[in-house]
Length: 123
Image (cartoon, rainbow, N blue to C red; front, side):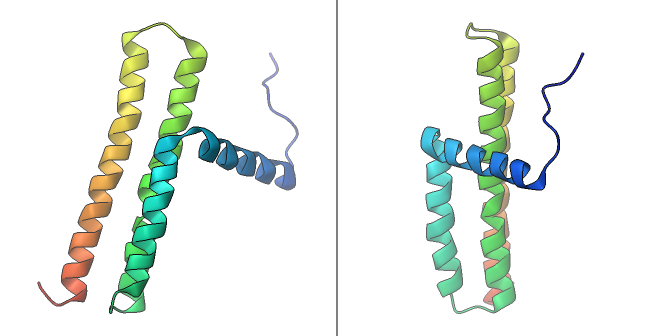
C-alpha cells in the first residue's frame, strides 16, 4: 500500500506549512485569539523596563499556547474526518487536545510570573 505522501521538496513542504497556517487562521477562532494574545502580550513584554533576556523569555513563552492550539486543531480535524457521530474516543481525543492548550496557558502564566518576579528582584 502506497502512502499518500508526495515526493519531498523543501519548497513544497514549506508551502504546505504556509497553507496550513493560513487555513487555521481562516477557520479557527481560538487560534485567532491565541495570535491576538501573542501580539498584545508580546508588545507588553518588549515594553517592560526589563533586560533583553527576560523580555525574550516572556516573548518566546507566548508561542507555547499558539503551538498547542495548532496541534489541537489538527487533532480536532482528524477526529472530525474519521467520524461525525458521537463516540467516547472522539470526545476523549478532543478533550486531550483542549487539555494540552489549557496546560500550555498555565505553563506560560507560570513562566511570566516567575520571570517577572526575578526581573523585578521580588524573590
